[in-house]
Length: 137
Image (cartoon, rainbow, N blue to C red; front, side, top):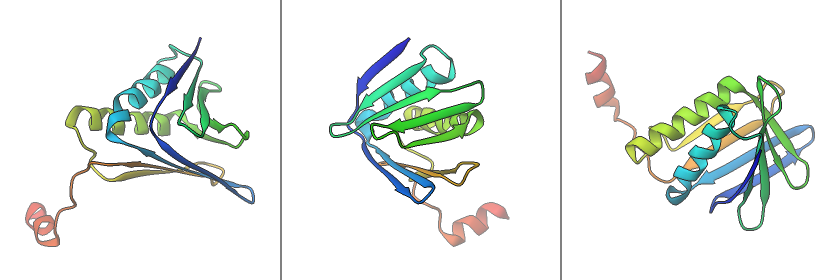
């Protein structure tokens, strides 16, 4: 089964030589739908999700038991393993639960050297050096 949705997310998908770089900003209003899409894929309730972002279309799919693929309309694609997809989904589930991220972005490096960066609007401010020391005492 395939699903199609429209989200107000911004995407920069760049190919530099053999390296693909995906930078995706998921704003607050899109967090719920984005998180649901990731979970549907991980639970294998859909085969592919196509996301329209205004000027871009991307498709998300599980290619096999262990490979998750993000592909744009120009056939540039990035693949990550399922454990990285689980990590990403957990980050967004916590964001949904708490109303903000633990950090402002998540970076994932793929086994073949591609990069994914997911940015969010609302996040916890980092603790000061003195507060970090106090917590470690």
